[in-house]
Length: 255
Image (cartoon, rainbow, N blue to C red; front, side):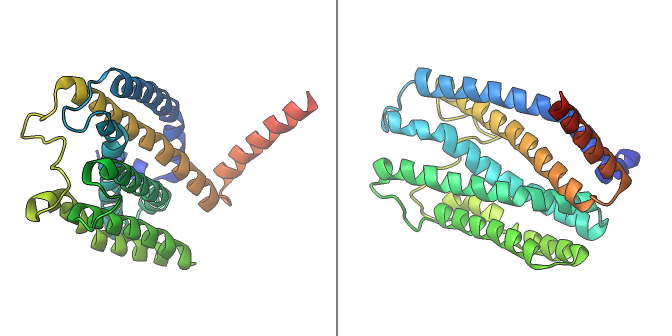
């Protein structure tokens, strides 16, 4: 187990193993995404109160789930950065932060689209909405801080500390609908309770959640590979990879 842990900290080893899994992650995510969208938008029955407007949940709920999960993953990577000082942990944080920001924005935007016909307004300073907006600011802060500090080690430590401070917002997002009187409905899925929706609604939603997590895995690996190539650009193995790529490109041009 410890051998695997140390291997995982090697940029070269991760680059190779990620290349093997990325096609599977992308292919399975796209298949599930198409299946979930078609099932949810075309075959799931309308809600007895909200009609067809509820169908935005097939985008809103997965993006909201993943936006929070990505930040928790970043917090775990932040601990690894501070304790074990693994380069790959900081690579993960720097690569995932922009993805998390986009997911949080999509969650807020789709929530506003859903809120207009449901609540009669695009935005309200609801506890859930406000805490999600804070999450977006945290993602932006991580990106800005990482770009503001030139020294790689100092940047990694500073970003890790910010991520760990901001992770306190995640339980606030999760339990805001229980701690305060809010307009936002309770969680769609709970591990300890049966879903309140019929299977015709929650099964395609679960498919969409799984599809987005797999897609996140693919894009995280892709961005991490790009970050690794930039950071390790002076190492011999990266030069060999780039040299192979240039040779293939030259061969195509010659042909």
